Length: 290
Image 1 (cartoon, rainbow, N blue to C red):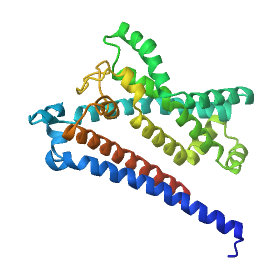
Image 2 (cartoon, one colour; image 1 turned 180 degrees about the vertical axis):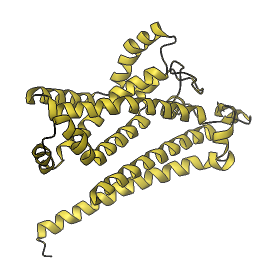
Image 3 (cartoon, rainbow, N blue to C red; image 1 turned 30 degrees about the vertical axis):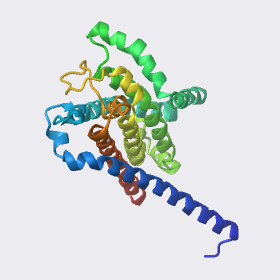
Image 4 (cartoon, one colour; image 1 turned 90 degrees about the vertical axis):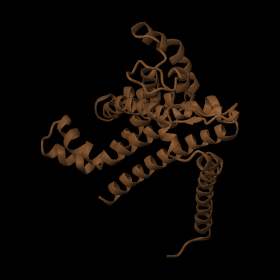
């Protein structure tokens, strides 16, 4: 197929940018592996999941050191799962409201509000959670800074992602589907339930997975409101520490094996995010081939 000179230049530029992006990701992975290798070699991968607690700093003083990541991994997964369970129905309902129920002016204003939420820095969410949300939870059940506070903060932070991407998926449903449902005499809700949601399912699931990735990687807001106690939570009112918060708190003074163990935490997070992105791509590819 004939291509003009401008098309060839654009194609070459896009290939270079894509190669650069892939190279950056590979360099990050290589950097994490290199920095994690001393801990993986001297401690062993299994001890990061079988040690009784997390006290890696004692290894610097000649002690054995303890490197259990399980409490922080559970804190990360619990806060993420709770936020996704709350944000998913709210986000899908918001998308349906904007697309099918709200007047155009109200839908536009609500959409702008969601877009504004996506631009607020996470430290601002954390400050609001620390000064407003945590004291409210403390009145209900001390100490206030807890898994519940982390879940609620993450819910607010990922809700715009779910809502905006879900609405984009709803807007991509072919008009012919809607006209066919109207010709059959289906009500608005019957059309949404039987036609629109099944057609947009792949995009909605992808939106949820991308929001999950953001929740897993969030640091500052969760650090400020979750309590930062290394323990397995037994209720939503218990303080927790996530993997990202642990890295942010300890990397400034960590040395030797302790520092390398923190990079192992980062490697675990990278693997979790890569699995989520792969799942989102697989779902998106399945939708395209359907």
